[in-house]
Length: 198
Image (tube, rainbow, N blue to C red; front, top):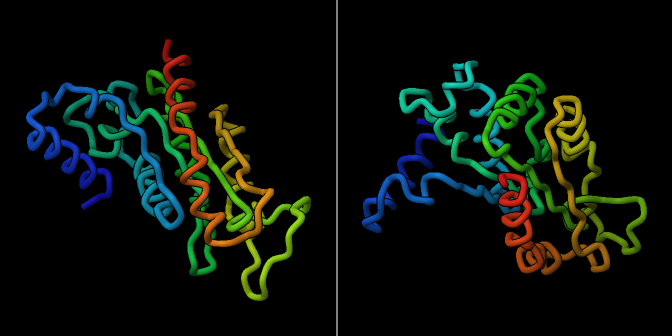
């Protein structure tokens, strides 16, 4: 089955286990966060959001619509925290058609789904970075990560994407990578999204 279906089933099971209503906030306001290799899961969901088989606005809210669109209808934000993978491929989704369709669906959500990327020097190499990388541990450029393509497509589709650079005053170590979790401010994002939703 799909990642969207698995996640929906997990959330629905949680509501049963916790004895709460299916109409509760748990199934109405979802924030998806992927740290490090967790980016793979977010990319799979992003691809499913783009590939789902309906194009009409009503499909987002329809209980009979594909799992990806049902999940999208409750997804308030997606946050990639210092995303990285070890197989040399792009970190972010590179299928432009899927990205454009996903962006179109994000814009139709009410409130619109927020997209956030947080990167540290452990994953991203910037020209202005002042520390040296150990041999064989050079970080990738934004183009190599696929971030440039993601930003370009989202900008063309008028879909806001916020990119934050974190810990660039630190050496590119695993400790810096995990410090992103400590410094990540989910409350700031929640307040931002709630403000936009009005």
